[in-house]
Image (cartoon, rainbow, N blue to C red; front, top):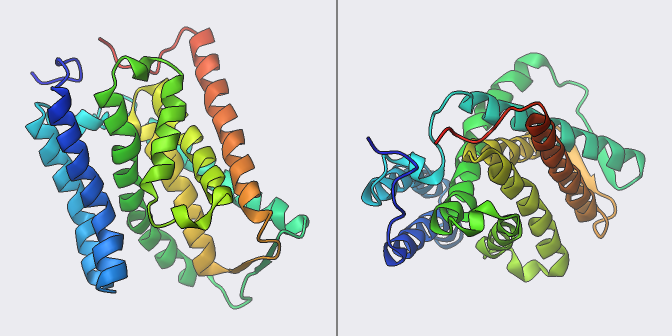
Amino acid sequence: MLTNDLPAPSQPKLWLAFIVLFCAYQLPEGLGGRILGSFAVQAGLLVAFLPIAWAVGRWLGFRGLDAWYLDFRRGWFLLLAAPFALAVLAKAGALALGEMAGIYGIAIPKETSLAQVLPIALGMLPYTFLPSIAEDIVTRGFLMRALPAVSRQRVFIALSALLFVLNHIYRLGNGPLEWLLLFCFGLAYAAALFYSRSLWAAVGLHWGWNYAGQLGDRLANIDALNPAVAPLVSSATHLLMLGAVVLCAGLLRAKSFSLRPAP
């Protein structure tokens, strides 16, 4: 039976797998969005990422997505749902505090009704899920699989966060403030994987943040009144989420529970 405990694939094979995953992740925005300007092509390429990641996992000798720590062991849904809820609440709190501090201007149309909101809220779930899980596979799941020795040390969190920054090739030109923002994001998401040993936890945080942000943009007019400070709000919020992940992991260990899969 194939498990996560199989001997690691050869490094050349793993890095060839990374090239495939990296290109499959970048193509939707690069080819579909920037070159062709076609939402249909962009969406199609994005949907294709998961089958590609599954096929690459099979090629490496795993069942498929379990190559990237996306196995369906007991408790996987809780590992996805709890961080998702945390990130949604964190995004809402960051916007609320930012508005109070004069960093954001938020206007919700008065005519907004539940009948209008519900279809948008439901539709945004898959729309934000696919890019979130795709990037988590490339910058976190792959790294943990490729560097098993490093993945057992806390330096893994920083390395994964750095890869997360570099993976945003279309945003690197925005400068150091953008890099800091992405690095803080990456720290929180990588820590979720590091302490749980399941990529579902990282997907939950990442997906929840993206979902709340894009849903907010659809339902309200959100303006950054202080563009120089606004990214720091998101950075600080992710550092708080990082602290929450570490705290929860410590509490679970103190109660003799384990988030790690059984050997």
